[in-house]
Length: 314
Image 1 (spheres, rainbow, N blue to C red):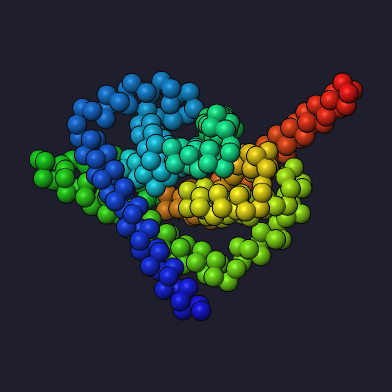
Image 2 (tube, rainbow, N blue to C red):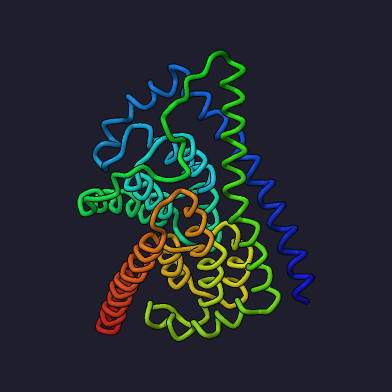
């Protein structure tokens, strides 16, 4: 069984790498080439004032836009093409952890009955708030991050050299991510075949009550926590229907998950960027727990008041 899981996981990892590579390669190539044209400087100067408010240079708009409208990998592809300090990469990584792949993942939320405005408000709000807080609180991280395009734009002559440089940068970015993605998909496949995800879901049921949800919300919760909103979309939607998870519990679960989902993948993929990933994970986890408990408390309190008012009216 393990051998079959390894084969399926490896195949899944290769397919995932191929699918992601089809996004990362053109994105990295285009962004790299744009560094040698007037287009990128124009965009940077236009958005620089807004980026400076959260402690980032103007070109930070590139990975943030790519990550939010495409996916986390496209955002990282944008990061890999430019020079950054550890603090700058950490802020961008934190923002992208909270807010990425908005189009697809927001669509998943809507299919499970969660309102769009709630998801967008929480995700974008947490991204901006985290950037402001980290910029104000963290005084270190001024050294250059590893894995970046060190030394700024290289001195290249002619379109051929620029294009070749872009291709090398793109292939390097894919290689960095393949080292993480392929083993990750193997591990996920083994967890699925051994039914560890199901066991984890059952074990986590009591924790649902602490977060203000019923135990039947545990499966979609665990799926999003481990596989992510996009990869685990099918499982989450099916579990929500089969287990009769209420819209209230699904909304509360999604509020947690938009702050902290795909904890293994979304943490490990930032390792090649040379930033401290443990604080990245802890900030997401603590924020998710606190935010979810506050929302659940207010929601339950409001429901209780409404029920009492209904009783008095009768």
